[in-house]
Image (cartoon, rainbow, N blue to C red; front, side, top):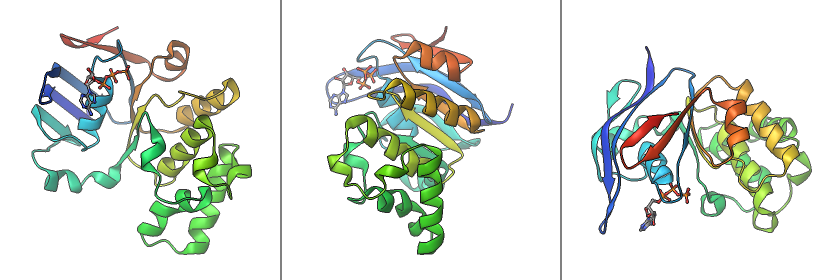
Length: 216
Ligand SMILES: Nc1ncnc2c1ncn2[C@@H]1O[C@H](COP(=O)(O)OP(=O)(O)OP(=O)(O)O)[C@@H](O)[C@H]1O
């Protein structure tokens, strides 16, 4: 199987305790996998490790069959990874919605007009074009989440790491996110407590517990 993400005997501990251990996982090309588990089981930390935000792990992390053993090596793959954190507040790069959604395209050298058109298209496809000129920090938590998702999807990363993507969304926004994510053919790891959301999206579900990841 062609794997986008491979984890072998991955473990992580911070200064005071072991967060998770014995984590083994293969996520195939365009495969969608969900991870569930109790509060504090380490799901968000695991996603942060895969997203290249935590480096003091033990075991192997491979992206597209390349073993990542340093920050420098991770850099080669950073643009392939779209990471939606559980709390999106600290991750916005611009104060206005349309500017934030355009930002990563502009950073890749795409001209302003093209970036603007693409940003508008994605906001329309997510039914949030009415938010385009709003200040991000005046939006509701659910609106911020869906704007953050638009800012990630616009760059078309090969892998999506989504931490509670429907947290704070109302049912119509949740349905829109399900439809959008179902239409995207990418490798995904979705962390969520929403069982019905997961059922609609990910055929493979693991529980993270003290033994590692167990297939449900
Ligand atoms: N910045 C941090 N500093 C210290 N401990 C932390 C930090 N972030 C997380 N932890 C601890 O790591 C453990 C795992 O947290 P994590 O957020 O990864 O769990 P989770 O499974 O995502 O939980 P939840 O379902 O509640 O979101 C918890 O015991 C938490 O207290």
